[in-house]
Image (cartoon, rainbow, N blue to C red; front, side):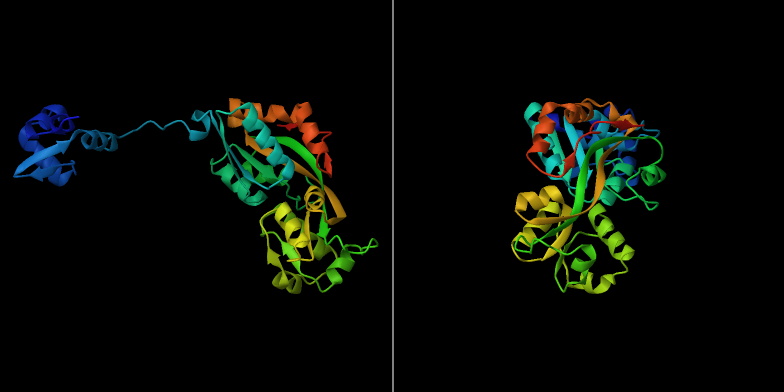
Length: 301
């Protein structure tokens, strides 16, 4: 592209804007019209003049949300899960032109990202303050305009060293020990369960939390225990199994995928949800441990 094609002189930009040539100088000084002066002559980059014009438009119609226009992009945030990782890999194999970006931010941050319109799917396993793994508290936060898709039931508990004796103590006995715990960040469903159990058993959390180490996910906790950097940590049975650790069940939880109804029927979201009802998903779960797929794919409006 020649310089004549890239730049306009004062007369050309006046014609382009439909103003008198003398008004061009006022637009430069008072309205920020993009211009450069070379050897005493004003030149106006065409592409910057176009951007200046667009930026000056009033009553600009809103652009369609990225989540609804980028049909080859799937954004997921929230809690982590080994079976979810397998399912995401399976989705990529079936849809190689699609880009999947997944953040292990924890359940609470996943819901925040969904509320802000930053992701298609939030992955959640938060205990309802009233008890159990219901979705009433989620709808109070996000509103009624969501679909809750059941991913799987999971066994949540304590991961501990494989060399522990077969007659391992119960949860209160583990908390009573002088051991180092692998801990998730506040706001994650797993940390919420740990805090809830300490409160239920009347355990002072300060000594446990102050001596613990931070980990990013279930498998991270299991590997920290396996490597000896921690003695125990809350997590799911699948992670304990993968790392070769022992496991003390605490409670069965539900792991849900939360989607805004306006995005629920997007093709990439529907393609992903369809995998929950396939044989491959059941085979993936069978290669792990601690999952219940009886309600997988069930949708709550």
